[in-house]
Amino acid sequence: MWEALERNGYVADPAIATALFLATDLGKPLLIEGDAGVGKTETAKALARVLGTELIRLQCYEGLDSATALYEWNYPRQLLRARLSEHEGRDAAETEETIFSRDYLLERPLLRAITHRDGAPVLLVDEVDRADDGFEAFLLELLSDFQVTIPELGTIRAEHVPHVVLTSNRTREIGDALRRRCLYLYIEHPDLEKEVRIIRRRVPEAPAELAGEIARFVQALRRRPLAKVPGVAETIDWAQALVRLRHGHLDTQIVDATLGCLLKDRHDFTDLSRATLGPLVAEARDGSPP
Image (cartoon, rainbow, N blue to C red; front, side):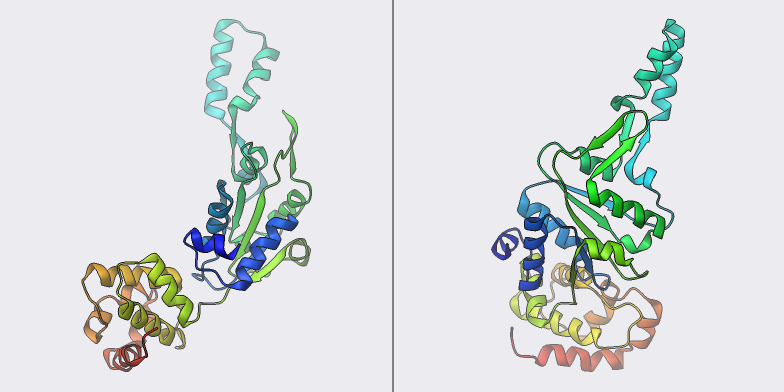
């Protein structure tokens, strides 16, 4: 699994590779937790690339209910069909059977994952901690048997059981029942060596020395008491920005000008004055090459 992830552009480590292998081999959902920006969603995308299958993503949010996540009827089309049938003098029972058929069903992510016919997809339930307890209970039931009942159509069972990845930023504690149903993986912010590898992989045009300086600066920044710690995505954005600006090394001026690639909170900008940035830049530049 590790080699397959690397071939598909994902910088893995033993814990991640092992968790993904066991989840797919045992047919168990995988719950991934960690701070925002550590690469939880990207891990699910990498798994889909490795398996050569479709990634179906359900983005959770407060107020998400089972109906929205499963399916909806296409009411405008149904209404139009009903009016046309009435105009054509068709039988009401025949019209009802027509408009409550699969042709008028709008499949949402969970139902799409169950009805997927071209092999088992990867179902990503992203930020499950944002949904409420009721949706979590429904999700637990769905993960147990991978079937749903639509009153108008009957019970639909999965032909191919999806590979399920759930992510959480821990804004709300996930229930014990759902945790027990899943394998578990916690992803930390990458260490220096891994972050350099990620930069070189995702921004190959960045010189090796610049990649090392960027990684050391971000590592030092994360040790500060920030409101929003920059994640891997911000590191990549910053590396791309510096390459576009044709900077092969860090200096206080360019760091100050591009800090918006890393920091996303006004108070963090206020706390990082130019006097503070100087020592951080010096630390990044004085480090030994990776």
